[in-house]
Amino acid sequence: MTSDPTEKPIRHPGKEVSTSDASGARFNVDPATNAEGLVDAAATGFRVWPVYARYTAADAPYFGTFDTALDTVWVREGLVDRLRAADAALAREGLALQLLDGYRPIAFQRELWRWFLAEAARRTGKPEADADTIRLAQRYCSNPAIFKEDDPTSFPLHYSGGAVDVWLVRREDGSPVDMGGIFDDPSDVSTTTWFEDQPCDTAADKAARRHRRLLFWAMIDAGFVNMASEWWHYEYGSRTWCQALGHDRLLYAAPPGGLPGAD
Ligand SMILES: C[C@@H](N)C(=O)N[C@H](C)C(=O)O
Ligand SMILES: [Zn+2]
Image (cartoon, rainbow, N blue to C red; front, side):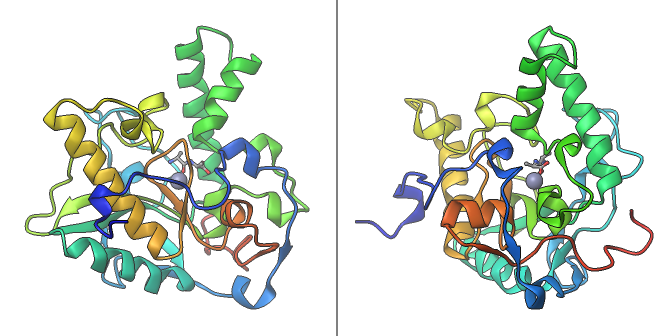
């Protein structure tokens, strides 16, 4: 058994969960942890790049920004030490975590869903209302249509403040490393284990597999779980975390009071 994360194939601890599995599940909410506030990750010392507010007309896959995206990455207090632990593990490889998104207001989740639905329709060649199109969009984005206003445990995963989208950058200059696919690409190559299931004959594929393993094990060892369809999406204390690890209480549902002015 090796302790070198680059030699350890990605294997999801507990149950492998997809975005659509996670919606509709019912959990009790722990009032103590759910009372935790949201913390500005940049002010806490993390490297951040809030993609949804920063991408330009030149950046795939959106080729633009989103009107309702936040330019600050907010996370629950309970994530801070865990993200620090993951970042410290990556430092041994000369790498660092960069946080792309955390807490996400409902209005922004709706705007993001519209993009994923339109993109899914383009890829399936079927209307947005078609079941195949909705299934494809739902594989990569929580569908706001299935959330229930009176059930905080059904809210979008990022609304909990316990979900983060991350990638890796070099510590020396902050440049992103090759993860073997672009962030938020709604296609199979985004599956976290994609390079485990390929021959990986080229140097580029080997590098992508290495980077995905490093990110995965740093985050898993720090207590997070990963969304199997997205190499960048990790959660702690939220619905996917409960489902994957068999916990029956959500640490984080809707943050009390949300973020002033964001909903
Ligand atoms: C859109 C993508 N970055 C993401 O965060 N997907 C998750 C599953 C979501 O929308 O909840
Ligand atoms: Zn995410």
